[in-house]
Image (cartoon, rainbow, N blue to C red):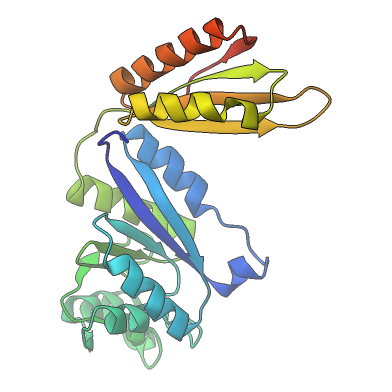
Length: 250
């Protein structure tokens, strides 16, 4: 696989798992990170269950990638992300003085007794500014925690990317063809050979079963590596006399 930059994502909320709301974060992340030459390496969805969320964050803590977390940092009883993050990272849950000041400036006396709980963050956290209503998110080691609402979270995400991960990296290139009148299983030997010859590019195969079977077959990665693997693929398809048409790269 090519050495291009990647991030993980954790998207939190019972409302997503029960179908009351549809997730908008993952499509946004794929498009936004792609513009910067980044990609999502993995994504997991979790509900508002404290025990499961602690375990999930303990697992993602071991990742060597930055992790973007959305949802559950509010002040209502079902918002448990702040508490789970503290437990998962073995940190005390404390009132962050800068977060207290921001919430008090925004709400005055109405910050108490409920809204002020959003200033209770894992010890060692740094703040992520929120231009929508000034209630901050927070970063803890290589994890970054945002609200679930896109109109708040996405400007905060832009700030994290600009300040913590500046720059634009080599774009991920994709090259593929649609191979006609063939089943995916018939291409396995070819795919194994190409993967062995081009380990720095990632092969993908998308079968379609219908009136006419076809398989979209291609490579993703940095342009030189993916391009070389794709050229090798075309040579092999021609040698085997397989019929194909090019699919526009993304």
